[in-house]
Length: 92
Image (cartoon, rainbow, N blue to C red; front, side, top):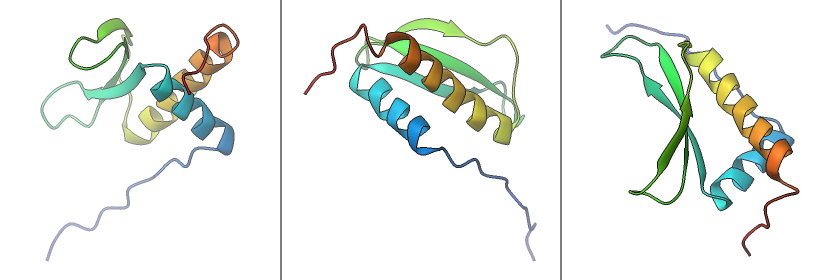
C-alpha cells in the first residue's frame, strides 16, 4: 500500500538532554532548517533571544541528512553548554 521507510533516530544522552534544557533556559535556540523543498538536507541555525526578536548568531555552510542533523544539533548544544554554562547565571 504505502512506502515502508526505516527512519533512523538519534537518542540524546543524559548530558545532552541537560545541555538542551540549559540552552532553552538561557534563550539559545539551535534548530534545523531544511535547505530546500523536500530535499531531506538541513542547515543548522543558532539564534539567541526571545521569539519573535531572536538574533541569528550563525548558520552552518554544510547541509546534513536527517540522522546526522540530529547528532549535529546535540553537538552544538553541548558546545554552547560547555562553553558558557559557568559564565551565564541560570534563571530560576
